[in-house]
Image (cartoon, rainbow, N blue to C red):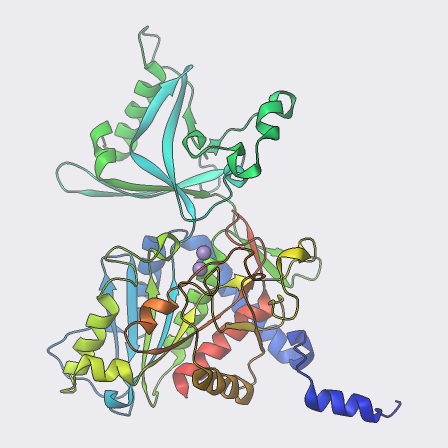
Length: 466
Ligand code: MN
Ligand code: MN
């Protein structure tokens, strides 16, 4: 082996040069990452909506010794509690050996993903086809949602108050659903429209049936047949749609991507790829010094509003409640607390290099991305993490052998986006965005690298256990 030149040695010493995480990992650790992602894939397949993810995590937490938080109880170090926020968000917490005066370590991710929500009055018949009207949820490229198999998830409340769970299109043999698209032979006008207008929101209608009720003649016989089937299966009438939340999501299962199986393709990595590792890290945090608070929230994709989103008071109130158990004031705890806003960032895509500044872009397989700021047009609407906190996280990850990189969401003025970071920061908490880089973000089938998923787990665990 030839010796390194002086320049090479100096470069190593002076240059910032993030590299493929595989170079820094022992084979053993790569195997651990692959094994971790087997559990992650099961989670992806079992939880396609925020309700399903919240229920899954609640059950997992209970199995691991978490009990419902009681504001009137007193807790000792190592005690594990949870708070259920209207079945769509969840907080897991492990009390630390230090007083909450020293602050909590918070990791916050989201469990909602872009999808097609059914409208309150969705079912209609046209040209002897039965269809559902939808209103899309979150930022989607509408053309990606046509001509792919869809599954229906959600709940329906009947007039008598009883609740029906719906999950159709996931099991082998289940019927599936689809938004149809124009054939290329007849799409001249459509093809000449800008991509953002090629498919209109009101055209995202889901095909759900095509056979009439019996042989009776009359209007809306196909719709009647669908209502009859729904009545038989779920005991519902059409008006019950008004008190339902039904969501159409891609019916695909998560799968390994690549000959080397180094990646996972799935619907909804954003942001279950941060939620799952953070929950596993929280569960594995047994006797932390500082109290750990792991939040999986709803509504991030629509701006974090609503009482299950992080713009609401549920986190602030939870912190106030745990503070009270130690005779403290919530705002004093918040002021001393630190948070990783755990959300995905865009991975550099060599097919579309022009939207990124390569110096500041995240690459899949280089570990988790620390994103100092998000926002758009001159950092508008961002939590711009303080250098003091960036320094702390940098040292923590380096010392814990967590592969990490910095990342910015695209070039200046190319677009932009936001996360829950600013809502937590607005409470007075130190916050920085940390998450997994994703290819094809917000598409029905997104891609992440297994090493990055594992590094998210490692990074969150190091943060919660510091
Ligand atoms: Mn996200
Ligand atoms: Mn998103």
